[in-house]
Length: 284
Image 1: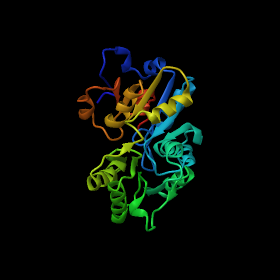
Image 2 (image 1 turned 180 degrees about the horizontal axis):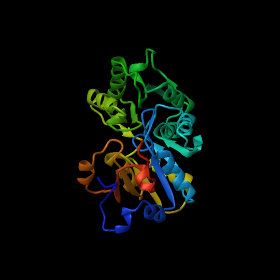
Image 3 (image 1 turned 90 degrees about the horizontal axis):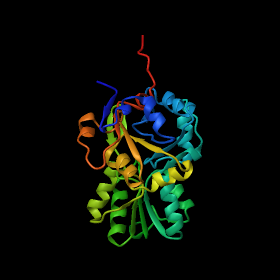
Image 4 (image 1 turned 180 degrees about the vertical axis):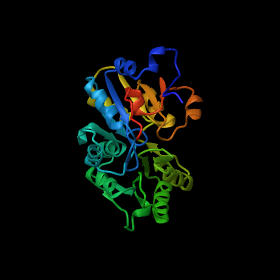
């Protein structure tokens, strides 16, 4: 299978070097592009280094809301990718900003990790999880978690039915891991939406807020979004006025990518390494 699968009429897009030349800045998704769970994707560190060596700016944007900001940078550094917390914009961080700006002082019920609970509290909201007010929260936040129990869904749904503001970090149905696609934030959100009869306001991709935060970090210049999902990364890029490249190391197959319509990625590529023109050595 060839590394590049062109979806435009520009022949130069078949070479990674040409793509690097066409853009000044890159917004790179994490899950499915840089890593799968705790496992780095082959060549991702070299690809980021190649971009930076070419004088390009790189920031990372993730719909994953399970971690505190520094945790993403620590994980990147563990995979030999230099990063600071300020190099990563996350749905959890953007959600915290929105809560602080518009809902400070409200009572909140949160489905999410301890890191997400801390973000909501830091935004100035009172957490009502585990209290008599859990079913009558003023704001319900649904974020990624691997520890969801039925009572979380019950309290969230009852609060939403009673009129709570309903926010979610993301709608990604799956999260790519080495052994396949795990249920993502969207799978949890679907249960609450089904039980409450209401649809949440999503903060992460495909909404443009996350990429707009990344663009504020990068400043002006020709920018390419690199992601592994059509329904979040590519759509978010279009809504933010950016081109998008799709890698096939995460949630999207080549067949699915080729069926994409409005928007479409400027290129479909096997991996971040292939996009950057990095040649991987086969094990001997």
